[in-house]
Amino acid sequence: MADYDYDLVVIGSGPGGYVAAIRANQLGLKAAVIEKERPGGVCLNVGCIPSKALIHQAEVFASRKELEAMGISLDASGFDYGKVFKQSRRVSDRIVKGVEGLLKKNKVDYVEGAATITGPHEVTVDGKKKITGKNLLIATGSRPREIPGFEFDEKQVLSSTGALYLEKLPKSLIILGGGYIGMEFAHIMSTFGVDVTVVEMLDRIIPNADPEAVSVLEKDIRRRGVEIMTSTKAEKLSKAKGGVKLEVSGSDGKKTIEAEMLLVSVGRAPTSEDLGLEKVGVKAEKGYITVGDYYQTDVPGIYAIGDVVPTLQLAHVASKEGEIAVEHMAGHAPEKKVDPDLIPAAIYTEPQIASFGPTEAQAAERGLKFEKAVFPYRGAGKSVAIGHPDGLVKILYEKETHEFLAAHVVGNSATELIHELLLGKRSELLPEDIATMIHAHPTLSEAVMEAARVAEGWAIHI
Image (tube, rainbow, N blue to C red; front, side):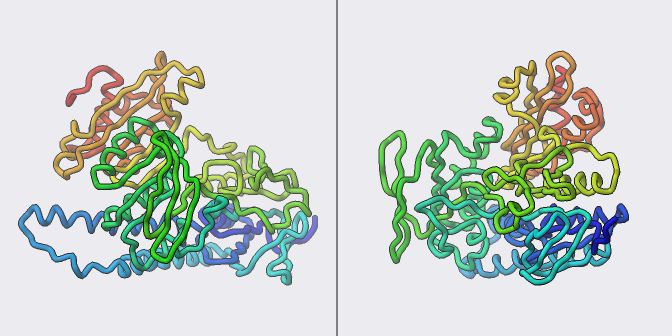
């Protein structure tokens, strides 16, 4: 057997890469991680972590209205968004240092530089240093997708990365793309007082989410002053010293909307170029690397995970894929590819949206025979007590067996509540099991219990 520097060389240190390297160490494999930027990848540096820090601070800012309702006078004239930005960076830096510590604790070597695959078991860093590995794992993630005519300059035309690095808020902002990233930024910016307009080409925002859940969010965010233009196509962008003009066309014809800045949020593109894939025969389609059941490519010993493969572009998906790939390398018998119906999706607006499994329309397209059970948030006393009564819990279950198919939750803390229902599905429980389990009162999780009772035909608080 050939001698290698490592059992595993990981390219990329995001939630997929660093988790895979740590799991490798747990399984007795010597691992190294190569990273050309900062540890933690997009998620920790310019994605989920700093954006959630901004969301938290936006919601703290919004809570001043509750204090005013108590008769407390607040002067917000000294508000400085620059301090909000700096706090988000401190949070990111703290977690990045935590990842560095985890890698060190687990004896994973960290190598700085740009990696290129120069052989089935070889990586060259910055064109100089060669590192060999019995297995290579590509975990290079993704970047904001650009579209012709709307290229990023990070001054007037922002990517999500540029938006996270704003140290001063614009007075007005157009968001091109009403997906989950676009709507999270709409939530952040509008809460801090920015005049926000969302332009979405499809007939509704967050088109992959449950329409009933989305309608709750849309009603709330419109009430807070965000203008949402659906079924509207962006035709042309022009920039001037004072801002941007966006020509759009929709059902009511063409018009021009103006703002200080434009945020383009139309998805993410895989970062698979300049890795040397073609030289070693790793196949990719439209930038996404083709993989098998255990995330192995067509080249023995080379694996790929995360945003660079054609699966859901979520940090927790990348982590799980990394675990499966490494367990396969180590000769274990892991589960195969992540089941899309067992992946929790989370949107951190207010109200939040969380789900797993198909929507009603998707279930019908699959030919599934199902029923649904819906319970309104306001039926759980805690939602009213904390001033967040808007929302619902929806369960889809098989008509004959009553087995869980999916769940869709919209409301305060929905991203936390979804896991009880997902555990029910993964553990092959039935709605009856949740319906009969005692839930603490008052809690939002009682809405989950009551939705399960709706499925069983005996809900109390509806």
